[in-house]
Image (cartoon, rainbow, N blue to C red; front, side, top):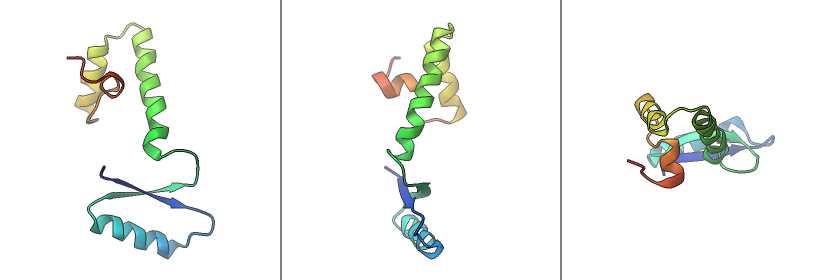
Length: 88
C-alpha cells in the first residue's frame, strides 16, 4: 500500500508534519496529512465513490460503461471491481 496517512491533531507541530512527510517519501510512500477522525482516508472516500456508481446503475447506465469511464479517467480499480472482483 503506497499511501501513508499522517494524522494531525490540534497539538501537532508544523515541524513534525514536515518531518513525517519526509520520512514517508524516504520509505517510498505517498504521504497525506489528514485530521483525526474515524476511518482511514481511503475508506472515507470509498463509500461516496461506490454509492455514485450504484446511483448511475439505478439510473440505467451500464455497469461496464461506468467501469470503463472510471478506469480511463485514471482510477486503477473500478467500483464494481472493488466490490465484486473483475466482471469482465
